[in-house]
Amino acid sequence: MKWQHFHTILRTVAYPNQINIIAPCSTRKHNLLNPFPSGYIQFRNFLIVRLLLNYGLRIGELLLLECSSIKSNIKGDKFSLIVTTVEEGYGPRPPPSLKNVWGSRVLELDKQDYYFLSIYIGKIRTESDSHDFIFTSSQGVGKPLSYTTIHSIFSKIDDVFTSNYPEYKSKLYFDALQRLTPHVTRHTWAYLTLQRIYHLRYLKSKSTKKHLTVNHMKIIPSLHSTVSWISQ
Image 1 (tube, helix red, strand yellow):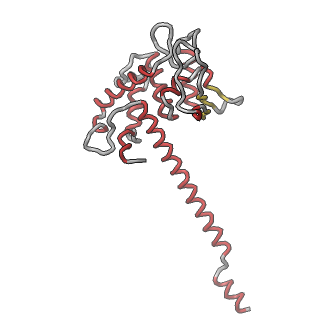
Image 2 (cartoon, one colour):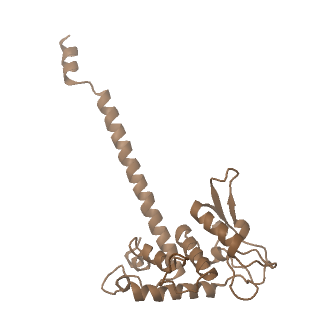
Image 3 (cartoon, helix red, strand yellow):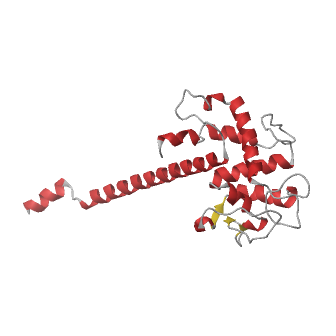
C-alpha cells in the first residue's frame, strides 16, 4: 500500500477508539462520547459503522441492503450478507447503484453481527410499507437513508474523534488521520484483511518448511549406519 494512503487508515490502535465512540448507551453504562441521541439512532449508527469496518462495504452497497439480505443456513450456525442491486422504481427514492457488475456478492456474516442485525430489524427498525431497506430515518415514515445522512454521521463521529484523540490527527506523524470518512473504513478493512492474510500465509509457510525439514532428516541415514553399510 502506498505511503500516501497511510493517513486514510484507522490503525489498529485508533480502531478500538472509534468503536468506543459509537458504542450505544445502555441502562448500565452511559457512553458520554457518543454524539447521537440514545436509543434507535445510536444502535442504527453503531451497526452502520460496524458493517462498513468489518466488511469493507461502500456507501451504495450499505444503502442497498434489505431485510432479506441477512440470511442464515438451515443449521443456523453460518450467516450471510447478500450485497446486490434492486429493481428500478422500488422504494421512495432512486436506488443507489453498485460500482460494477462484480459488486453483487455474498459475504460471510459474523455471528455477532447477525445477532445485532436481527435485533435491529426485528425490534428497532421503523417498518415501512414502501420499501425493505434496512437502514431508515428516525423521522417521519421511516424513509431509507441517503448518502448525505451517512456522511453527516461520520462528520459527527470525526468531531468527537478529533476532540478526544487529537494525537491521531496530529500533523507531527506521517500516518496521522486527516479526516474520518466512510471511505476510510473501507481502506481500514482492506489494510487489516491483507495483514491477516499475510500473517496466516506466513504461519503456513513456516509450518510447511518445518514439516519438510523433519521429513528430510528422516530420509537422510545417520552417519553410523552409513559407515556400517560401507564397511560391509
